Length: 580
Image (spheres, rainbow, N blue to C red):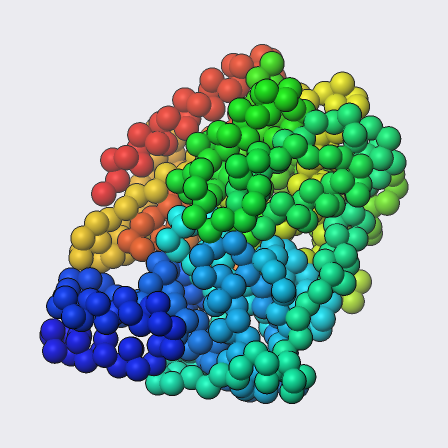
């Protein structure tokens, strides 16, 4: 694209963007003849992918702004009208900058298309949006959020009528419709939409129903009521949406939270952290400091849209962070174990995890008689699996599931990561073990001694420059077509290729089509000692994520097993560093 074409594109955007703030940004760049910045904002359209939109806030086609939100919504509206009759949608938004404006922008476009729209009156969490889609019987849902990205980002996630993020064929159909939208987008004023009974503002009724659902997840409500007030929980919503639902649900159950005051109120600038991501130790620093000061029994944090949960628990006198894989194992053990002990286990109990989540969870599920189902990476596939269960006569009963990246689901009324229900269940789990004289880390040691010690690590390999994407694809092709016979000092046992659905069994020199999952460009190498290395390219940038998981039986001293696994992890990390 030459400079003249670039300027023409920018001028066209100015005629389409009705928001003065975003329009002015581009007008200033044109006046200054800032070609470099204009190029970055207009060389491409912000990609509407399978999960929706995510990008830096600002004027231009390659940014999150009112026009890109309206354009995406028009495409989604076109798809809803083709796929449903009497279509409707629910819209929620988090604490990020411009989130409330973008939510209203989307609502005005839906209403102009005759789509009945439910809009929350204030910020709400992603799990409540998923719940509301199901409760209100809507055709689709939108949540305006960029999850745990830095403050300059915002995004737009799309949900279908089951409350889960869209999956095939809907995702591809929506993408096609969005790409087909050009030019001005129709919209209706908020006042007219309300008068015409197209726009409905969601009130306390949905909040109360959501909190009621969260409380019903409790497996030991009497224990929480009787001992919860003496159980100290420090909580940070990281200036996002989690403050109200997490504290309200826990308080009504019987546990009062101590807030990190500086991180309690909604603030899209997230002034106390670099990234509002509870997976990061640095992000949880203030909560850990307050937890130490208060001698807390549990520290918890949620990301801005309250779908991810990070925690820390006492261990030998200090608060230590619990990984996503570890918390998923603890929740599986608590939920499945309680059902088993209480005699409330359904006939076909199901546990669901992603293919890059620790195998410790499979061992725990099978111990309690549950079947462990694997899905591709992405929580939408867990939501899809629940829908599949429910479509079968006498199908499996979903009880709990999650993914390694701090996402968990402990109910079926929500179909996405739910940090609200996960927080209440985690607090109950920790309180139960405390009542039995154990910490969460004590319980982890019990699980490790029973099932083996597991450790996981994520290593990202980024390929820079224009040739980055090409090099990344070449590396995946090389790993697929010419895999190493030995990796990190261990012979290969099998190679799972999720692209063609087959497993290559090295010893037998035989391939079997035994992977019943959608095609995805993912390779999984199982080593002779049971270690697993999974290679998964990013869908949005030239990066391959390598997930490594190692295990060792604990026959004697646990520290010996931990040391052995760390050596395996180090060997894999070293081997991956040499791949290029």
